[in-house]
Picture 1: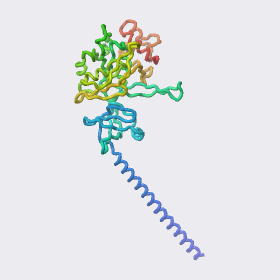
Picture 2 (picture 1 turned 60 degrees about the vertical axis):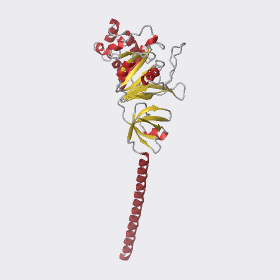
Picture 3 (picture 1 turned 30 degrees about the horizontal axis):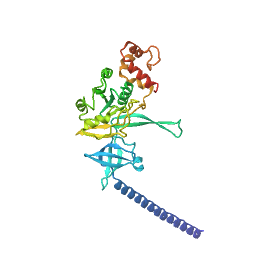
Picture 4 (picture 1 turned 120 degrees about the vertical axis):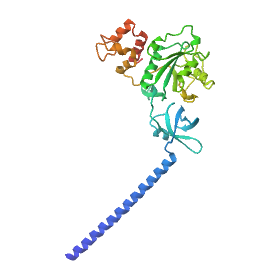
Length: 350
């Protein structure tokens, strides 16, 4: 029995030795694979770069964007691989990190956090004509000032659209400025005292005669600004006069409909002088608001704040509730009826 036991133990030892050698070989193979993978990752990172350069997105097209870097425009393709790496689709005004290859073409790596943004809600049809998808559409990022361009005539002044732009500015933490353009075409200018009473700076301009342009330059000086407004109000004409050259196409407003046509199809960044930049955006004919719920909407109308303290209900929407102090202030003329009407339209989703 002792002889058989010695043989059995020797065989068990050999099995343990064989298993140990096999495990070591497997671990060595595994380590080698990990080393090869790490080497491939390092090579890929070195090839793709880390985005050491920073620039400002000047324009975004369907499959590429232009990035302003040290006074030069860099062409950066927006291929599917790049879009998967980015947290969002870049827009004019975005600060981005990118790399340059040997032929001067850029590769975007990331979009830096946005300090401010001008946002609207974009509605797209789904697979069925009855289905609609709604998503946030950022018109411009990292801007200090939003110049809301309206026209005195052709097309006529639309206060409700201006009110919605003011809500957009508050939502995106952008300072507003109301610019009434085409003043040379109106015998009588619209009354903008409502907005002056809210503390919104108001300018009267004409891209044709040059009226008010120097004052507009003063407001733009040293800032990143965006021109936004209804189609046909003359934003592109103002940009051309400010840049002192014809770089943007200008279209006439239809005499039959009084509505403007979209001559600017994408947002674009222009440098006026050192430290002063201006973004021109496409005209908007209808303006839906993004993520402004019914309860929060009242806070975007600052003239409601003081009277609302005397409302009967703390969560009063100032619509059909009894004992509403805001409706009473409207009746007494302390709050302009036009502003209250705009509020009700936004509240009802119009």
